[in-house]
Image 1 (tube, one colour):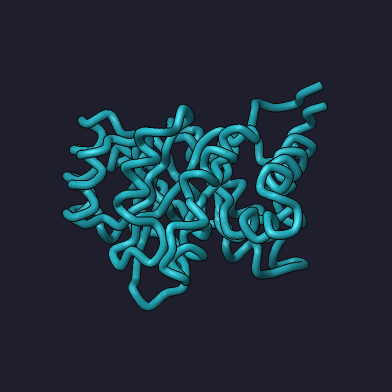
Image 2 (tube, rainbow, N blue to C red):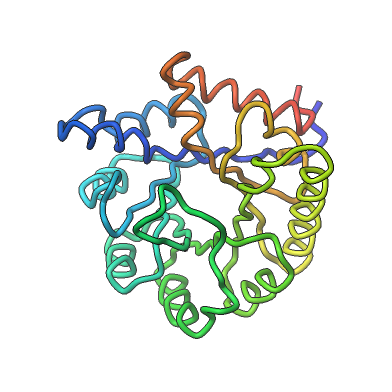
Length: 247
C-alpha cells in the first residue's frame, strides 16, 4: 500500500556521453541509454548541455528531443546561447544551473536571488515557450523566495552536502531540505531534489512527502557497469518506492 504520491525518477545520461567523448567515438550512445532508461521505468531523462560540450552535445539534445516519449529535462546555464537552444527544441523542462568551466560537476546551487534581474526575462521567455522552468538551488528561504518571485514553477534542491556528511550534520542537512521542500510546496512550487544520491542515502530524501521528483545520474551510470543500466534503475526505483511505502 502506498503512503505517498508517486515519486518520479529522472535519469541523467550525461556520463554515458562522458565515456563516449573520452575516445572520440560514436559509442556508447547516450540516446540509446535514454531509451533503455525509458523502457526500464524512468519518468524522465535529464541531460546537461554544458558550454564546453564536455559530455552532452547539441546533436544529442536534438536526438533526445525527437526520440523520447517521456519528458526531457534540459539542464543548462543561464546564457543567451543556451536559451536559444532551449527555445529551438522546447523540451518539457529546463533546469537552470550554475556552471563554471573549471568544475568537474555542478558545485552548489544557482544564486537565484543574486541573479534575479538576469534570470527574470529568461524565465519569462521559457515560460512563454511552454517549457517548465526549474531552478537548481540550495535549500534556503532566500532562494525559495526568489524562485517564487521569478515565477519558476519548480525548484530542485541541491542534495550534494547532505550526501557528503554523516551523523548529526547529515540529520541537520536533511531537516533543512525537508523544511525548504515544505516551504516551497506551501507557496505553490513543486520541489525536486538531486545531486550525489545513491542507494545508501536516497531513502531519507525520497521519504520527504513534498518532493515530487529525484534526478540521479552519475551513480546510476556507474552502477550500470556492474548491474546493467536497466537493473541499476530498477534498484533505485525499489529504494525510492520503499521510502514512500509503496508495496
